[in-house]
Image 1 (cartoon, one colour):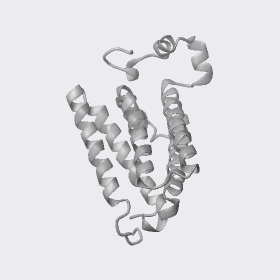
Image 2 (cartoon, rainbow, N blue to C red):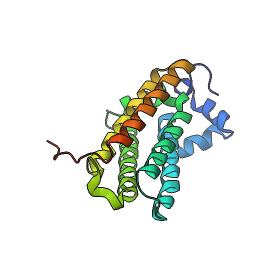
Image 3 (cartoon, rainbow, N blue to C red):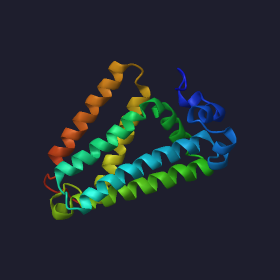
Image 4 (tube, helix red, strand yellow):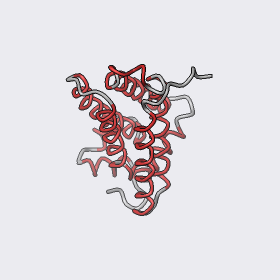
Length: 188
């Protein structure tokens, strides 16, 4: 959609044209394309969270629904794989104080809260059986997914992206094997 250099090289005008809206409207709602990206990812994560929270609230609990939710998160990330280099660049630019750091920090805080609530709800009947407490499991899942985004950003061919899919499958398998492992000691 944005050419060989992808979203990161696109101007706000190109993004507006691709979205079928005026550049002025885009600037009215988003300060920059980085802000737009953060909000697009945030909206996607909210949608996945709502879909699975409804299921969890209806009583669908345990490892299988948790794995389905993890699969849905991966599918959403994988769908945005063309944006992965820009996501990584945006995260690296967010180290400086300012609006972008606030946007990224706000998204990360919200994503952590949704993920932790989801973990607490889906494993509500088995919290004591988890290998690590929900707050630590939240961080492990987030760091793992962030690492896969970096791998996607580096992948240039379909073959390389398929290798990242295998990495996700391995992560999923590992998660399914250790989620209910013997609880660990407290974090140092």
